[in-house]
Length: 398
Image (cartoon, rainbow, N blue to C red; front, side, top):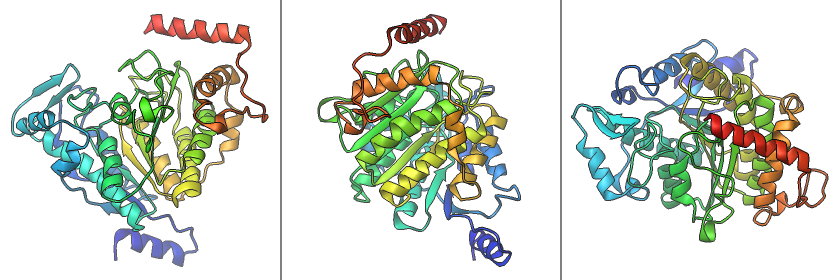
């Protein structure tokens, strides 16, 4: 009997609600990647999360999923042969600098292959029904990694590799990738921007690294409309994010009807993160997770898989992941209505109008306003001027 089965049996015998079968990818080898002292992307990020799993409320509540090294052909669907060879050549070597933010240590390539492989294993387990949903607590992160370049702490693009894996190895047709990290997932976008079978939806802080993800980056060729970028000014909090997910992501996702939802879960939008300017709380992350679980239930039998991206305040990271995991395994069920009621319409209304105005030709569900009227061609001029002025001020502050 596994730890999960024992915990579920004990809950049932004591009349407690039995948690969902949520899978967790963990492995001590992820600590082998270390870019040096005082780096924000550090092994301690997973130390605090793995300790979290031993807390009384969560201990034994998850199905452990062992990662495996990703196969070279799966890497090659996303990355160039020269780049794969370059990363492999760093094995056993001391610090190799790949860009100004990203370096390797002797075991980094192994950790990166296990990160991509662990996420693919999580998808396998969810697809097979052995778990209902899963969270890959892996590192290094991946969403900045380009086809032929490391970038922004990222070596291999875990979520892009996993999306291709789900399609090529498991036969899933449509994949929704949601990225709520503070920073835009440039590598993920570039991987799929001409592919209508993968819908990429990203909320991120505007005018910051990697300086991509503009509203009118909507994809290319047959993929036009399948890249949805929602750049935000600093200061967005729980209610604001939930409104954007409920009024933009949810209708698009229900129209797209994905077979699987993948989430690049970055926790650097927490109000205490040293790299960010957003105001999310742990309860707000649970609310985002609730919306995604609801979408997954309606579209793809609940098939939701998350992978860790950013989040650099260790206490904030631990507290936020705890609430996400509790939401995923049924130990909490967030009522999003109070969060949505707390949203600041001065922040969200113009963002929603701008996204709908750009994407209404691609998504019929966005062509109508909340009142059922066609989306207006014009936004109130004073509100628009205020929004544009705020955007320019943020640009010059950055």
